[in-house]
Image 1 (spheres, helix red, strand yellow):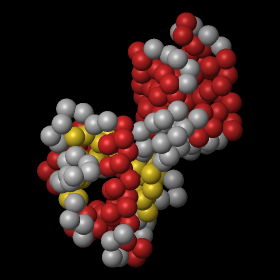
Image 2 (cartoon, rainbow, N blue to C red; image 1 turned 180 degrees about the vertical axis):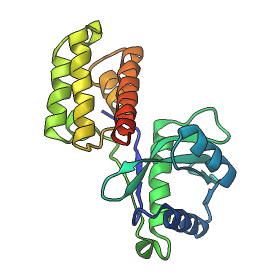
Image 3 (cartoon, helix red, strand yellow; image 1 turned 45 degrees about the vertical axis):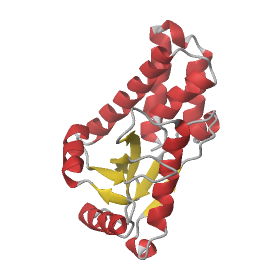
Image 4 (cartoon, rainbow, N blue to C red; image 1 turned 30 degrees about the horizontal axis):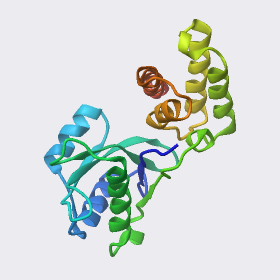
Length: 217
């Protein structure tokens, strides 16, 4: 399945103030990228978690756009990912443009002076995905496969329980699973209608968020 790339930015430590300083410094060292301070504050309020909007000026190869970064959890270190890249002048981005911007962001920032010393690490996911790539953990993948092997499109209570068990497994094992990539797989590889795939995406996303809040209660 061809898919949109996700950008992952990992902080050097749990000190988010230091991360903020280093990220802004790296962006200032590139002529193409800048942190939008006001928009980042607004996005943080909207997302209810530390977030950034970082603008790309655009050139002859890629259009002007903004990459969003939001904190998606603490594993060994805080990690941000990109829930979206939005065009600044166009109505939408093609998948090739979207992925090109993700790769350009990574290459520009990782080539700056001081990137290694910053402790920040940036990577992008592959644009080719199968279920094993989307759900790398064997146990989590087994739970999702059990859900698919039932009758998921009937929305029967038993099938919903199988999906919820998968969500619980992702939370318990701290798995890196993108709800958007799950939806893309269901549409592209399983032939699901978009409305059904988005329903699964939204349930997984809401379930994981609820479990995160419950763990902090």
